[in-house]
Image 1 (cartoon, rainbow, N blue to C red):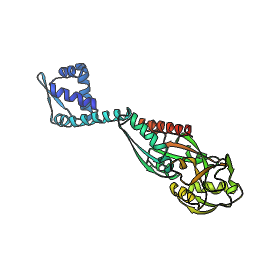
Image 2: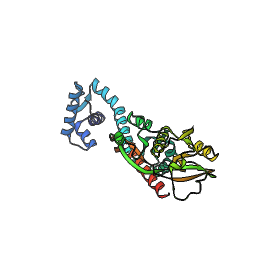
Image 3: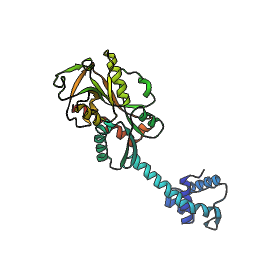
Image 4: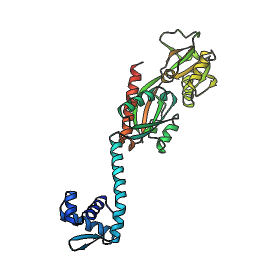
Length: 304
Protein backbone atom coordinates (compact mmCIF):
# COMPACT_ATOMS: atom_id res chain seq x y z
CA UNK A 1 0.00 0.00 0.00
CA UNK A 2 1.35 3.42 -0.99
CA UNK A 3 1.43 5.89 1.88
CA UNK A 4 1.05 9.64 1.44
CA UNK A 5 4.14 10.38 3.52
CA UNK A 6 6.24 8.23 1.19
CA UNK A 7 4.92 10.11 -1.83
CA UNK A 8 5.89 13.41 -0.24
CA UNK A 9 9.43 12.10 0.28
CA UNK A 10 9.61 10.88 -3.33
CA UNK A 11 8.58 14.29 -4.63
CA UNK A 12 11.18 15.99 -2.43
CA UNK A 13 13.95 13.67 -3.68
CA UNK A 14 12.85 14.19 -7.30
CA UNK A 15 12.85 17.99 -6.93
CA UNK A 16 16.14 18.29 -4.95
CA UNK A 17 18.12 15.45 -6.54
CA UNK A 18 19.45 13.86 -3.34
CA UNK A 19 18.43 12.26 -0.08
CA UNK A 20 20.25 14.82 2.04
CA UNK A 21 18.69 17.81 0.27
CA UNK A 22 15.28 16.18 0.51
CA UNK A 23 15.86 15.64 4.23
CA UNK A 24 16.65 19.34 4.70
CA UNK A 25 13.49 20.32 2.81
CA UNK A 26 11.32 17.93 4.82
CA UNK A 27 12.98 18.58 8.17
CA UNK A 28 14.28 15.04 8.69
CA UNK A 29 17.57 13.16 8.41
CA UNK A 30 19.12 11.64 5.30
CA UNK A 31 18.84 8.07 6.73
CA UNK A 32 15.13 8.66 7.38
CA UNK A 33 14.62 9.69 3.75
CA UNK A 34 16.55 6.63 2.56
CA UNK A 35 14.49 4.35 4.79
CA UNK A 36 11.18 5.74 3.55
CA UNK A 37 12.26 5.44 -0.08
CA UNK A 38 13.14 1.79 0.48
CA UNK A 39 9.73 1.24 2.04
CA UNK A 40 8.03 2.86 -0.95
CA UNK A 41 9.99 0.78 -3.46
CA UNK A 42 9.10 -2.32 -1.48
CA UNK A 43 5.41 -1.34 -1.62
CA UNK A 44 5.34 -0.85 -5.39
CA UNK A 45 7.68 -3.77 -6.10
CA UNK A 46 10.07 -1.95 -8.44
CA UNK A 47 12.98 0.54 -8.20
CA UNK A 48 11.96 4.21 -8.36
CA UNK A 49 15.42 5.82 -8.21
CA UNK A 50 18.85 5.08 -9.58
CA UNK A 51 22.02 6.71 -8.33
CA UNK A 52 24.19 8.35 -11.04
CA UNK A 53 27.31 9.71 -9.41
CA UNK A 54 26.24 12.14 -6.72
CA UNK A 55 22.69 12.59 -8.04
CA UNK A 56 19.52 10.57 -8.00
CA UNK A 57 17.59 9.90 -11.19
CA UNK A 58 14.00 8.69 -11.42
CA UNK A 59 13.27 5.43 -13.17
CA UNK A 60 10.30 5.25 -15.55
CA UNK A 61 8.18 3.93 -12.66
CA UNK A 62 9.45 6.75 -10.45
CA UNK A 63 8.50 9.34 -13.04
CA UNK A 64 5.01 7.88 -13.32
CA UNK A 65 4.55 7.88 -9.56
CA UNK A 66 5.79 11.47 -9.20
CA UNK A 67 3.39 12.53 -11.95
CA UNK A 68 0.44 11.07 -10.03
CA UNK A 69 1.74 12.08 -6.60
CA UNK A 70 0.84 15.76 -7.00
CA UNK A 71 -2.84 14.95 -7.60
CA UNK A 72 -2.92 12.32 -4.88
CA UNK A 73 -1.37 14.61 -2.27
CA UNK A 74 -3.58 17.53 -3.32
CA UNK A 75 -6.64 15.32 -3.00
CA UNK A 76 -5.59 14.09 0.44
CA UNK A 77 -4.88 17.64 1.58
CA UNK A 78 -8.31 18.76 0.40
CA UNK A 79 -9.91 15.79 2.17
CA UNK A 80 -8.02 16.55 5.39
CA UNK A 81 -9.11 20.19 5.24
CA UNK A 82 -12.74 19.25 4.60
CA UNK A 83 -12.81 16.74 7.45
CA UNK A 84 -11.19 19.32 9.75
CA UNK A 85 -13.86 21.84 8.72
CA UNK A 86 -16.64 19.36 9.48
CA UNK A 87 -15.06 18.41 12.81
CA UNK A 88 -14.74 22.10 13.67
CA UNK A 89 -18.34 22.83 12.55
CA UNK A 90 -17.10 25.16 9.82
CA UNK A 91 -18.94 22.84 7.44
CA UNK A 92 -21.30 19.90 7.62
CA UNK A 93 -24.69 18.57 6.61
CA UNK A 94 -27.56 17.27 8.71
CA UNK A 95 -30.68 15.62 7.29
CA UNK A 96 -33.57 16.24 9.70
CA UNK A 97 -37.02 14.63 9.60
CA UNK A 98 -39.79 16.06 11.76
CA UNK A 99 -43.54 15.71 12.27
CA UNK A 100 -45.51 18.82 11.22
CA UNK A 101 -46.16 20.47 14.59
CA UNK A 102 -42.49 20.04 15.47
CA UNK A 103 -41.49 21.53 12.12
CA UNK A 104 -43.42 24.72 12.82
CA UNK A 105 -42.45 25.19 16.49
CA UNK A 106 -39.26 23.49 17.69
CA UNK A 107 -37.38 23.22 14.41
CA UNK A 108 -37.32 26.92 13.36
CA UNK A 109 -35.98 28.03 16.74
CA UNK A 110 -33.34 25.30 16.78
CA UNK A 111 -32.16 25.84 13.20
CA UNK A 112 -31.98 29.62 13.56
CA UNK A 113 -29.73 29.19 16.60
CA UNK A 114 -27.64 26.55 14.81
CA UNK A 115 -27.13 28.79 11.77
CA UNK A 116 -26.11 31.72 13.96
CA UNK A 117 -23.54 29.62 15.85
CA UNK A 118 -22.31 27.52 12.92
CA UNK A 119 -23.17 29.19 9.59
CA UNK A 120 -21.24 26.59 7.61
CA UNK A 121 -23.52 23.76 8.75
CA UNK A 122 -26.47 23.07 6.42
CA UNK A 123 -29.64 21.34 7.56
CA UNK A 124 -32.11 19.74 5.15
CA UNK A 125 -35.66 19.26 6.47
CA UNK A 126 -38.32 16.76 5.45
CA UNK A 127 -41.59 15.90 7.16
CA UNK A 128 -42.78 12.48 8.27
CA UNK A 129 -44.79 11.20 11.20
CA UNK A 130 -43.47 8.45 13.46
CA UNK A 131 -43.00 5.54 13.03
CA UNK A 132 -42.11 6.39 9.40
CA UNK A 133 -39.58 8.99 10.51
CA UNK A 134 -37.87 6.46 12.76
CA UNK A 135 -37.64 3.97 9.90
CA UNK A 136 -36.05 6.66 7.69
CA UNK A 137 -33.41 7.10 10.38
CA UNK A 138 -32.69 3.37 10.68
CA UNK A 139 -32.49 3.02 6.89
CA UNK A 140 -29.91 5.79 6.62
CA UNK A 141 -32.19 8.32 4.90
CA UNK A 142 -31.83 10.95 7.61
CA UNK A 143 -29.48 11.83 10.47
CA UNK A 144 -31.93 13.12 13.10
CA UNK A 145 -35.62 12.28 13.51
CA UNK A 146 -38.12 14.13 15.69
CA UNK A 147 -40.64 11.68 17.09
CA UNK A 148 -43.12 11.25 19.90
CA UNK A 149 -44.75 8.54 21.95
CA UNK A 150 -47.65 8.66 24.36
CA UNK A 151 -47.14 7.99 28.05
CA UNK A 152 -48.28 4.54 29.06
CA UNK A 153 -48.84 3.44 25.47
CA UNK A 154 -46.25 0.66 25.66
CA UNK A 155 -43.50 -0.04 23.18
CA UNK A 156 -40.85 1.77 25.23
CA UNK A 157 -38.25 -0.63 23.84
CA UNK A 158 -38.88 0.48 20.23
CA UNK A 159 -36.06 3.04 20.47
CA UNK A 160 -33.58 0.92 22.44
CA UNK A 161 -31.11 0.85 19.53
CA UNK A 162 -31.15 4.64 19.14
CA UNK A 163 -29.80 7.68 20.97
CA UNK A 164 -32.84 9.37 22.53
CA UNK A 165 -32.66 13.09 23.35
CA UNK A 166 -35.77 14.22 25.32
CA UNK A 167 -37.06 17.62 24.22
CA UNK A 168 -40.30 18.28 26.10
CA UNK A 169 -43.50 16.74 27.40
CA UNK A 170 -46.60 17.75 25.45
CA UNK A 171 -50.09 17.57 27.00
CA UNK A 172 -53.22 16.91 24.96
CA UNK A 173 -55.94 19.56 25.18
CA UNK A 174 -59.53 19.65 23.94
CA UNK A 175 -60.62 22.13 21.29
CA UNK A 176 -64.22 23.33 21.38
CA UNK A 177 -66.02 26.12 19.48
CA UNK A 178 -66.10 29.50 21.20
CA UNK A 179 -69.84 29.18 21.81
CA UNK A 180 -69.59 25.68 23.29
CA UNK A 181 -71.03 25.03 26.73
CA UNK A 182 -67.53 24.13 28.03
CA UNK A 183 -65.66 26.97 26.32
CA UNK A 184 -65.44 29.13 29.47
CA UNK A 185 -64.64 26.30 31.84
CA UNK A 186 -61.86 27.06 34.30
CA UNK A 187 -59.68 24.16 35.25
CA UNK A 188 -59.95 20.80 33.54
CA UNK A 189 -62.81 18.86 32.02
CA UNK A 190 -63.34 15.12 32.14
CA UNK A 191 -63.19 13.75 28.62
CA UNK A 192 -66.41 11.84 29.32
CA UNK A 193 -68.27 15.18 29.21
CA UNK A 194 -67.58 15.23 25.46
CA UNK A 195 -68.93 11.74 24.86
CA UNK A 196 -71.98 12.89 22.88
CA UNK A 197 -70.07 15.31 20.66
CA UNK A 198 -69.07 14.95 17.04
CA UNK A 199 -65.32 14.48 16.83
CA UNK A 200 -62.65 15.71 14.46
CA UNK A 201 -59.62 13.43 14.55
CA UNK A 202 -56.02 14.18 13.68
CA UNK A 203 -53.11 12.06 12.41
CA UNK A 204 -53.48 8.25 12.51
CA UNK A 205 -51.33 7.86 15.63
CA UNK A 206 -53.17 10.69 17.43
CA UNK A 207 -56.49 9.24 16.23
CA UNK A 208 -55.63 5.89 17.75
CA UNK A 209 -54.68 7.56 21.02
CA UNK A 210 -57.98 9.49 21.04
CA UNK A 211 -60.02 6.31 20.61
CA UNK A 212 -58.03 4.58 23.37
CA UNK A 213 -58.52 7.46 25.83
CA UNK A 214 -62.24 7.74 25.07
CA UNK A 215 -62.79 4.02 25.44
CA UNK A 216 -60.94 4.21 28.75
CA UNK A 217 -63.55 6.79 29.81
CA UNK A 218 -66.37 4.46 28.81
CA UNK A 219 -67.40 5.65 25.34
CA UNK A 220 -66.43 5.43 21.70
CA UNK A 221 -66.01 8.77 19.93
CA UNK A 222 -68.19 9.46 16.89
CA UNK A 223 -65.56 10.64 14.40
CA UNK A 224 -67.23 12.62 11.63
CA UNK A 225 -64.06 14.17 10.19
CA UNK A 226 -60.44 13.03 10.06
CA UNK A 227 -57.53 15.09 8.73
CA UNK A 228 -53.77 15.24 9.22
CA UNK A 229 -53.87 19.01 8.70
CA UNK A 230 -53.94 20.83 12.04
CA UNK A 231 -55.27 24.14 10.63
CA UNK A 232 -58.10 22.13 9.09
CA UNK A 233 -58.91 20.59 12.47
CA UNK A 234 -59.00 24.05 14.05
CA UNK A 235 -61.13 25.38 11.20
CA UNK A 236 -63.67 22.57 11.51
CA UNK A 237 -63.95 23.06 15.27
CA UNK A 238 -64.20 26.84 14.84
CA UNK A 239 -67.07 26.33 12.39
CA UNK A 240 -68.96 24.41 15.08
CA UNK A 241 -68.72 21.06 13.32
CA UNK A 242 -67.37 19.18 16.30
CA UNK A 243 -64.70 18.98 19.00
CA UNK A 244 -61.16 17.66 18.85
CA UNK A 245 -58.25 16.67 21.02
CA UNK A 246 -54.83 17.86 19.88
CA UNK A 247 -51.37 18.00 21.40
CA UNK A 248 -50.66 21.43 22.84
CA UNK A 249 -47.69 21.78 20.49
CA UNK A 250 -50.01 21.31 17.52
CA UNK A 251 -52.32 24.06 18.80
CA UNK A 252 -49.33 26.36 19.24
CA UNK A 253 -48.31 25.72 15.63
CA UNK A 254 -51.46 27.37 14.23
CA UNK A 255 -53.55 30.47 14.96
CA UNK A 256 -56.61 29.00 16.66
CA UNK A 257 -59.47 31.28 15.63
CA UNK A 258 -63.02 30.68 16.81
CA UNK A 259 -61.99 27.93 19.25
CA UNK A 260 -61.14 27.52 22.91
CA UNK A 261 -58.70 25.09 24.46
CA UNK A 262 -59.74 23.16 27.53
CA UNK A 263 -57.52 21.07 29.78
CA UNK A 264 -58.53 17.42 29.96
CA UNK A 265 -58.73 14.85 32.72
CA UNK A 266 -57.30 12.29 32.85
CA UNK A 267 -54.19 14.07 31.59
CA UNK A 268 -52.77 12.56 28.41
CA UNK A 269 -49.19 13.44 27.55
CA UNK A 270 -46.76 12.60 24.82
CA UNK A 271 -42.98 12.64 25.06
CA UNK A 272 -41.29 14.52 22.21
CA UNK A 273 -37.73 13.45 21.46
CA UNK A 274 -34.96 13.78 18.92
CA UNK A 275 -33.51 10.46 17.77
CA UNK A 276 -30.27 9.54 16.05
CA UNK A 277 -28.02 6.52 15.62
CA UNK A 278 -25.17 5.99 18.13
CA UNK A 279 -22.43 6.56 15.54
CA UNK A 280 -24.13 9.68 14.16
CA UNK A 281 -24.35 11.15 17.67
CA UNK A 282 -20.56 11.54 17.56
CA UNK A 283 -20.68 13.70 14.41
CA UNK A 284 -20.20 17.34 15.50
CA UNK A 285 -22.93 18.79 13.26
CA UNK A 286 -25.46 16.18 14.45
CA UNK A 287 -24.50 16.73 18.09
CA UNK A 288 -24.90 20.49 17.67
CA UNK A 289 -28.33 20.00 16.08
CA UNK A 290 -29.45 17.82 18.99
CA UNK A 291 -28.25 20.45 21.46
CA UNK A 292 -30.19 23.23 19.73
CA UNK A 293 -33.35 21.10 19.53
CA UNK A 294 -33.08 20.43 23.27
CA UNK A 295 -32.72 24.18 23.94
CA UNK A 296 -35.73 24.88 21.74
CA UNK A 297 -37.75 22.31 23.68
CA UNK A 298 -36.72 23.85 27.00
CA UNK A 299 -37.68 27.31 25.69
CA UNK A 300 -41.07 26.03 24.50
CA UNK A 301 -41.76 24.47 27.90
CA UNK A 302 -40.76 27.63 29.77
CA UNK A 303 -43.03 29.79 27.58
CA UNK A 304 -46.16 27.84 28.53
